[in-house]
Image (cartoon, rainbow, N blue to C red):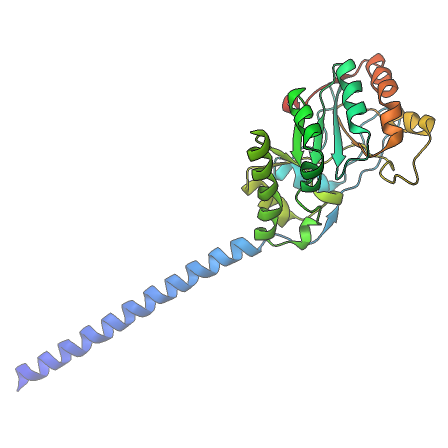
Length: 272
């Protein structure tokens, strides 16, 4: 009888111990899941619009504390170091307005390499010009498929916007893009993180001006003054290749900037 009681007691203790072990294991699993979820959702989705405060007398502009912190944290490019007189010329291209071949002629004549950020529409409608960019040693960058504001997208949608264009360009031109520019300069910390996870380098700018509206173009002299007067060390210059003014003044601008002692460099030669 005593032996029977001992067996029952031992069995009961074993069951209790087993249930306790299962409970501990489930609790640990639950904690692990929670930690993973928190890691994925802790990044801010708040939309930030890239903007700068211009300097005087060719001084570097103020990128803003938050902008600077985030672009550096995610290894992006916005402005080079303050010591070297380097300028990095970039163009945004959502569609072909009839000016890009002339811009390419000017770049070739002045031995300047630029970066062109293009959309899927541009690839589909101006593939001959994209091929020329590549053949002449320029960088082709990713401006997403549909030019959507990235903070409004999920990680999966960001992947589609970047990688569908990436694949199309690779298949069509055997060219691997590595730089991207967020449409409209809108981003969030979460979208920057999603971008670098796909192997891309985010590229912002330290100079831009109101050149994008085809129906409200600055005069040639206004454009020259605005660009040349704001030239600075480490500048990433953003121009729109859809601008008639930019097409007409580019040769003068390049020559003026070179005469001031600046050197145009490719993003592949970027000096932080």
